[in-house]
Length: 148
Image (cartoon, rainbow, N blue to C red; front, top):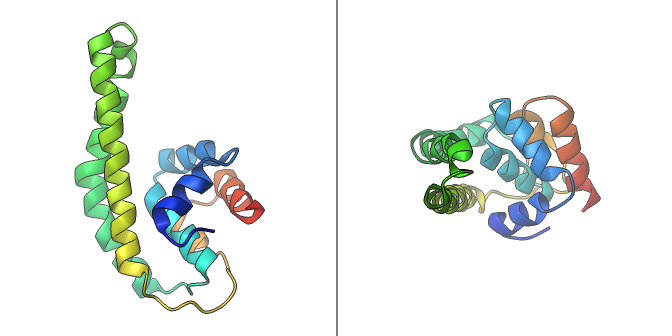
């Protein structure tokens, strides 16, 4: 897998079934950027540590709450109306790009925080267990990660 988190995340997201699994996890309350960061840490062999998880959450939660979620809500709120209004559809696309940039910024910040954490050997998938809501979507995401 890729050395940087953004490339890792976009490569993984492009795999069959990953987008749907991520959207399911998001609907269940998971921060997908944190989940993807956890998968990246697992792939690098970074041992899970509750203190490190706390650091990641303290970094991610305000950004998600104050930036990503409001952009997503605006974009989703315009979905139906944008079908009949081309100008609104164009604005909705711009909001979608802002949302994606906000997620990229969050991933870059998470990488900046965690990139110096030592690797301890082969991936153990512990980060995914701690950061993703249990269920079929998590298992499909794990399978897609292992398949790569």
